[in-house]
Length: 83
Image 1 (cartoon, one colour):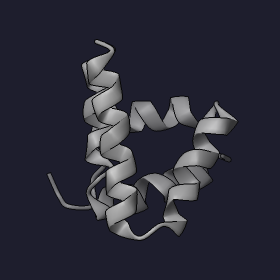
Image 2 (spheres, rainbow, N blue to C red):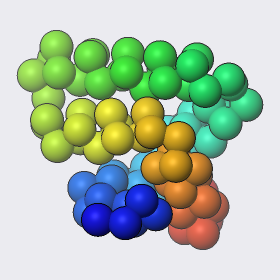
Image 3 (tube, rainbow, N blue to C red):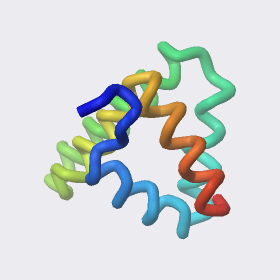
């Protein structure tokens, strides 16, 4: 997979996030944080999802956002979706 490609599970997540203004604002708001703080916030969310026994595909998609190139692509996609 090329570095610029967004995994399908992440695309699905972004469509859902774009429909939830609160989540979209949270994710886009992470752009203002240094990369390490952004990664920590994302991985905290992943840990909470996994601890609650929720959908592992969602946790995996959010974990992928810890990669800077995927995070940037995700934010651009959210904006394109109108979030």
